Image (cartoon, rainbow, N blue to C red):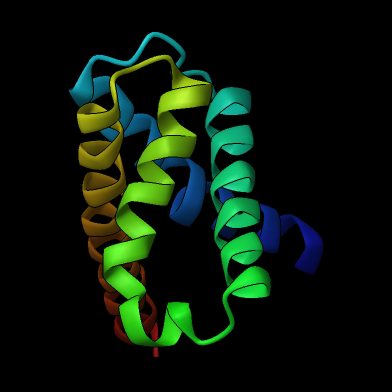
Length: 110
């Protein structure tokens, strides 16, 4: 049961926001698998930067994260680089809103 709940939370908090933002930006590939691959690629690219340039993520966090995520979204979701950056921004905003909504629902149940 816990595995199922974890899977649902991962899908709702991570993949669905990328799908919504990709639809808004007009990307070609907006299915769940493409969005999952784009998220994994973005994480791998960002991890690669922290391996080759330790401390760069700490000092230049948002300045590196947005273009690198935009690059991953551009490669996988089939869109332009600027739209990839917009997808990264939209995904972040939607994820925060969904997290607040889920926290509010959880607090209302207690």
